[in-house]
Image (tube, rainbow, N blue to C red; front, side, top):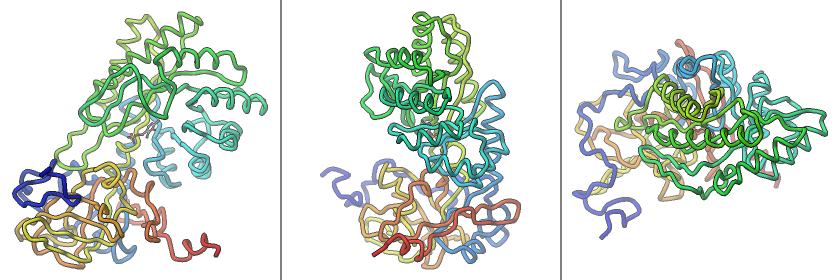
Length: 463
Ligand SMILES: *Cc1c(COP(=O)(O)O)cnc(C)c1O
């Protein structure tokens, strides 16, 4: 029988699921700094605190489930990326990871730029005072209305994703009497995930214009001819949750090759290159992400070396980290509702949220860790699967982890590293009310995105 034949995992206790922790951690009360936000620790009573506030107080005041975000950590990470790349490069935070007006203000304060991929992300950014020229607009199917809005607002760049969009943006810019700064997103045949990447000639995906078959070169040819466009550079984004820099190496080599061909054919050296985002974070203690300064050094060296050998001036580099900035800064706080030991298998721990607040486990088979945060415990470790309250057996938050065997209904548990792609991908499945995002900073907590209410939901249902 296949080890994964049963949807809930192995049938036999002696067959551990793939990717399972080999053994329980030495100390179940310990909080690995790699996966928890910077200011998280336990107080004298064993209660986890963040920004100096006990989670028990946060649960009382704001309810559960709730995303709790460490503002100091967010700012520190944003600053670290900004500092690592210096003033000769640009850091665009990928807003799709998690966007709110407070976040936009923090980014603005810390000198970062912002990527948006929809008209409504753009509105959020503008309404929080992000200057339009620090915003980049992405997407493989931007509507005419979205493009008009972006051009009118004066966004710093639109990243062109198709041949249709090249003429569409050019036409809109021209009819508004503007010349829009654009990059062309190309696919270089590199797909990177975690510790592996695949380099091919072709890439089978919806984003970007393939370098293969001269398509990217043709896109450049057309963009250079259109009065409404100012082509400033080439864009490449190769994947997500990447730890290994060699995928970027191949991508940079191929992008610089295109820049060289452009120079040879048109006599223009494009001034910018964007290498996208996708840098990995630690979801569990097994992950070892790199520091921003290491990433900056590696990327800058790669591009500089490739440009030297192509005899090109080194373009201005930009990067677009989303997860690497916001991911580690938040955890999801849940209350335990039911505990169901399945003999010889594992114990199912049900929480008051689930796939509506974290779809990543179901969608990507993502790994998370979990800890008891309302108290410490000396009980033995028990193998658990943390599940939600939704009508779906795939409603899993944490596939396999250990919690103390004396876990009881009413205990608070928290899943760290949920700052990215959790609230932003949250749904109303089973008419769940999407949880709030509570930002904590220096002993103060405030709601930056409030919890949905029954009225919010019913308002949309017009009968
Ligand atoms: C999603 C995305 C990013 C951010 O990816 P992370 O994994 O969050 O760093 C950056 N650039 C583009 C074009 C993207 O689509």
